[in-house]
Image 1 (tube, rainbow, N blue to C red):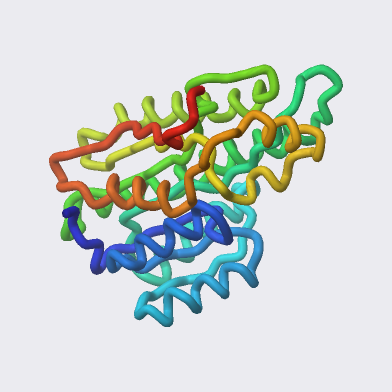
Image 2 (cartoon, rainbow, N blue to C red):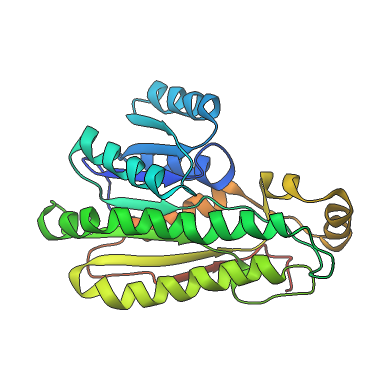
Length: 253
């Protein structure tokens, strides 16, 4: 059993669906107040109502973290509302696969803007508050969890730019971990394999069909990754999970 998160504040990006939604529910169930960040306000409000009905507390922030001003606003409003920030889950991301030859480069722009720059903007804004929580909070530890992908450890002919962004998440996570772990801010990367989420819905139809032909196994559910994230952030202060790769049992690559 891990520690409870009563009295702590967690911020989750990409909270309107999939892994972000499941993670927000999991952290709220552990006692954290959860700040819900995504662009789709109606989905966030539905999630907030679900958490509220279970006795939890939330703040809904319909913001676009690819804009550094809005990313900073998300953190500032969270701390302004609750006076602290203990946990950040950098989950927002988009997966737009396909060959590099003749690729629509606006897909590359979207992935770099969200998967990399949005994650960096949130981390940059949150770090002073996480360091403060680790120094002066009751638990004397804080967590930044970056959600990457198995594509951050291996690549294929369709995932060149997506993998580029996810390899970048892994590199940034490890560098920052070395920088702040001595101050008890734990920086972790979670690398899911295939998960049943909306990520595939954004693919071009011909790419989606190729992936479906390949994926002859049972994919993970969002709750599986939320459970992994909850495990990371509820470890005792002496213990840090630096990297967690989670594949479906049937996924070979």
